[in-house]
Image (cartoon, rainbow, N blue to C red; front, side):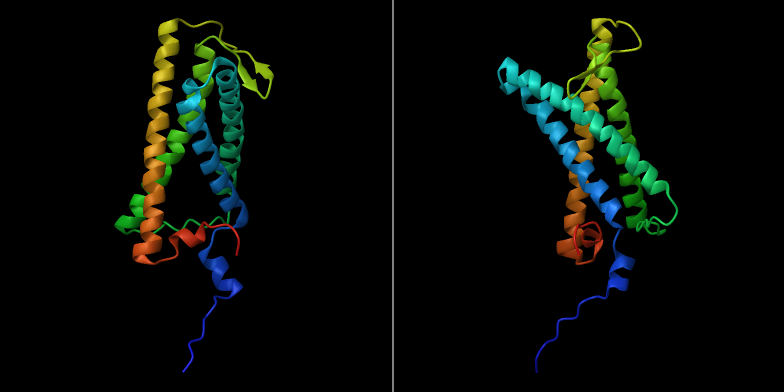
Length: 187
């Protein structure tokens, strides 16, 4: 007796997967968040010219992240987007809370990133294009306070995103369900 491998049909796959743009925006957001975090946490280990380039890259990619995040919010709000964690059970509620908290923190972090630069009395830099603050100058104390909140929020995002990724792996390897596969690119 031979075992046949059963492959799901395209219709059943689309019923269990997110659409391509949702998946692309998810992974682009994840990559940009990790890049931003790594740049900010490592630039102090580099000499001044490289450090400056890393800071400019951090600001520029932060503005790219803002655009991706905005696109993600708009796309998620369009009719027909599947939200797989809509159930009334505790796991669905926890997943909704995690997603909402990540969205809230990410939105706050983007705003804080802009204000961190401006309250440090420096313009934003979008790949060399300078965007000055429309608010004038700020005290050093204000700049340090906003920068500290920006750092705390960044660490909060990384911790929650790590928990989010860990739960996806738990679903995949221990619970053996399709939670991770729904968000994977490709077929």
